[in-house]
Image (cartoon, rainbow, N blue to C red; front, side, top):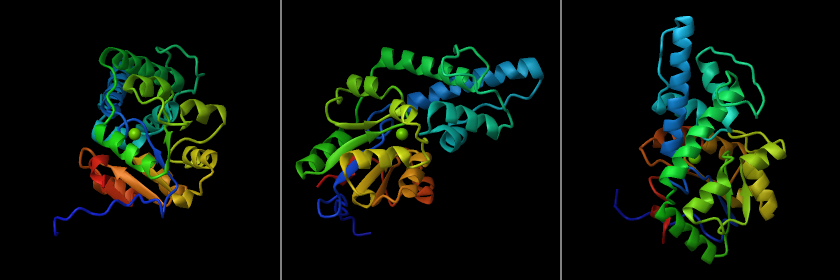
Length: 252
Ligand SMILES: [Mg+2]
């Protein structure tokens, strides 16, 4: 390696828009999501053990979260993880109370936990991400946020970046428009369409396996994986064209 910095791949000649994931890409909220999922599932699995005698096998962030939950709409994450343990619950309905033993009830319990943490700890945006957004907007490239989160508005506001994105496709839009969540490309494709941009001339920026898969599945021009914790091989394997540890690496 020469040690020279690679040229910034996001150029105006090649691209018209960059579509950013939210948690873990723009804001430092990926870890709190992971720990809230773990708390919810471990409580549930412990509870099952006391009722059924099944051995307690904890929810692991490095494997279970990354493979079955990260980046997906909330109820898809619940269902996909439980399926991996051979547990099938009824779906319930989205307004199930958080203690209900249904897919929706468990998802709502996780949402209750995350809202409490966001409220008490606040939200921090990554400076490298904000600097990259300023750079690409100066060049006339559009930006959008595409997330499975139904808390997108609150998170953007808490991070002080609510006015940057004129196009947002969040968990509420995905639900209202009956789109499939990541790893389906629907959310990213909807954002590109709203911006009037050909997917081949758009960049997807993601930190989740399901997210880079969505970028690949949508035929986007470039998929950038953000591997803050050295999980670059996995992201590359599932569809990232290039990997950074922080988006500040892409500044000119
Ligand atoms: Mg993410």
